[in-house]
Image (tube, rainbow, N blue to C red; front, side, top):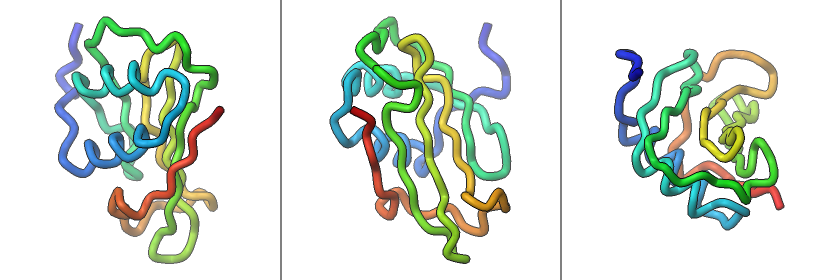
Length: 119
């Protein structure tokens, strides 16, 4: 059943998700298919999201729980991490946190996120 808190990703959230799947990784096309038809729910003040997908496609070739991640600096110079979680072939969460555990002062633009894909 669909939770009433789930909604379509806003433009910035969509840009961040798209940025995280821009580099090749095992299961990339399947994860992209899942994210093309998804809803999200805010998890915290940092912008972390629970992701609900509707695509019947399973990303069975994803090798790691976090197949792709990104990082950028907050205005105070502390690194912000963006981790895309895939559990049993289904994209479930975008986790966003600062390295020192403090609250984000400003969420960077998606273009400023450096992306790394697990092999």
